[in-house]
Image (cartoon, rainbow, N blue to C red; front, side, top):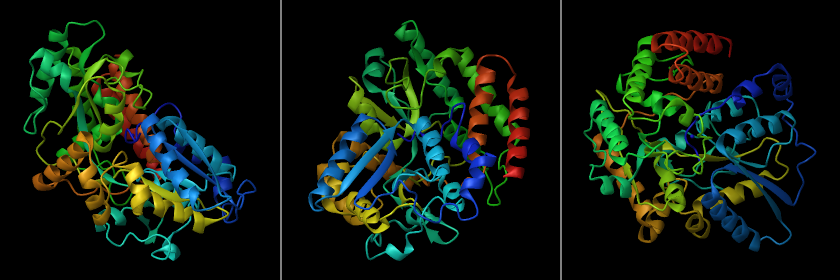
Length: 435
């Protein structure tokens, strides 16, 4: 999902990159030689995210360029949804950016389609992640080869308007809260705020990471290790029914408001003043606080039978298979992620560094948002996180879109939770069987 982790809209990169025309372009060695657009002495770097991320990234780019006379670096940044559609189009046309910010969920699909360059021959000579948390670095590998350098660690969390809850005299979400207690809190926020168009919480059912959290707490995963669907119709129906109940009580926003979230921090319902609680990644508290007049707090999800939150790479940097100068591209990645000057400029906006030396470097300079991230991940480690789930298989992006569609059909009362769950699972199984 910044990465409002893996959320969707009508056209996702998976549907685009899996189309016959693009499969033709991305197969049979079509990406094995640099595209005409790749120019020596010029790098293009692409990322998704808000204004604070853009400011930090540009500062790091400018610092890197100071020691490399004549190097031109062109930034490309858009919101989450637009990013994947644009990137898929660029990859299909052999015009991908040299450096690509990548979500770990989509890394397998891009790597296996030949869109990314393996980095093993540049480690450790150009990039040296030797002091990374091993499990996080491992997440950047596909089929034994290293394709992505994780920029940070994070976890799925709740963010909430701390100022509003204190004003209303209501408690913050706590680590032992059940879903029933969460629904009551959301309902109480809505009632006590007594403001038209303002609700206790955003709608988690439209967010793929929240369905993942739900199924993890039930002992399953979104996908299994063989690339098949890992959850059942009952898992999907119970989740959609829970959210429908909360929607009916006014604890979460109605469907028309949920549809206004364009998967950016700026359009999130917490930011736009439509909800007191939202669901996102821990690293994004930096961006949310930057655009919020209220104090933003961080909390764990409502508790399930089993752990549902896990430590994951917040995002990665990859080198395109069409990069004309992969060594310089890798050097920029190293500067941004592993060199003190670059790491200080980026801070923890993309997550807590997997590098022990960078974490130690940044610790004394962390602001309140950074401290909250570190504390949350520390507490999660003590609680016992869920294992890192299997990487999403080919076709997963289309399934993400189906999850959104199922939630919206229930939200707009076009289908019952049972009907939507049956449709979601049967269509998802069909897509994965053909991927």
